[in-house]
Length: 201
Image (cartoon, one colour):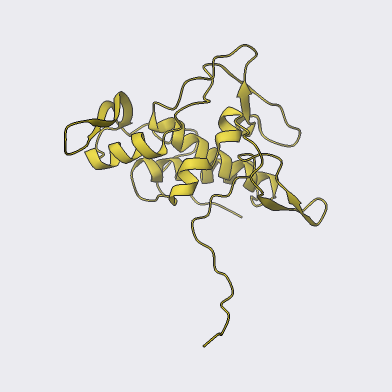
C-alpha cells in the first residue's frame, strides 16, 4: 500500500503541534467514596474531562510497564519498529501515565504487523501510516474499539506476555492456524463477531 499523509509531515514528530498537559482524573460514588483517582496524567490539553477520565481509568495499562525498556532487534524490520521488553532488573510495577504511551503502542503495533505482512510499498509508507494514526488518535479524529485500547501493543511496547487464553491466529509462513502462546503477543482485540444463525423458527 501507498499511504498519503493528510495531517502530518514527513520527518517531523506527528505530535509536534499538539499540546499536552497534566490532568487529574477522579471518579467518585454518589456517597463520596473514591472509585478511581489519578493525578497529573499527561493528556492532550484540549481533551474534555470525560475523555481524560475514560483514558486514565479504562485504557491506561495499570501495571507491567517497566521503568527501563530495551529494543529487541529483528531482521527485516526497521529499527523504529522493533518491539521492546523490560531491561534486566527493571521495575515493572508501574503503569502508563501519558496518553502518548497509549497512542504509540497502538500505532506502533499496527504498523509493526503491517510491515511483517508486507502491506506497505516502502518504509516511508509505514512511517506515514504510523504518524497519521498517532495524530488522529491524539486529536480525536479516529479511535479504535475498547479491546484495542486495552490489549493492543502491550507485548510490542512493553514485552507483556500473559498466559495463553485460547486465541488462535493464522500463520502465513506455514499456511495454518496456530494457537497463540501468550495473551498479548497476538491479542484478541475485537469486540463483536458475526456468527452463523440457525433457523429454528
